[in-house]
Image (cartoon, rainbow, N blue to C red):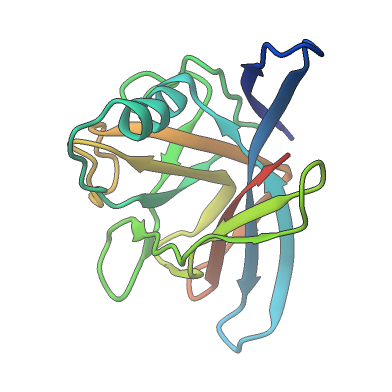
Length: 201
């Protein structure tokens, strides 16, 4: 299991007679929640795991928020990762990720494509220093086909050029993560994936 907490700090210096200093940091983390059911609808397994937010994903987030003049969200598209022991690096991109490969034995809505993550509006609760803000995507259902196989985790791709086409290497790899123990699927199973991201301060 790999977990990353991205820390972003805003620091304000206030010069008064008291020389007060205000400092607030924000941590951002994401989580994949996955439920697998057999062809009869019975739950085979259920698990959650945190993600690694890749360097290029952080750069895209900050560039579009703080310096972009116009930006249209592409996707984001959520894919599955193959294999029993995938590994991840902050420097991974859609083109180069030596520690994992994409799992493609599935359909979404009857087509062999990655799922499209549809996020609702962010919600917040609490006040600083215990404020929590969450943004969650609607669950995406993947129907396992062919020989099925071992699902090791999930990834999210967005940005210019991102595509729902399986095995496509365009776009920006925003995040990726793996189960603590890889999961086995067979044809006819359905795998439901929900991705959420949370900012805390």
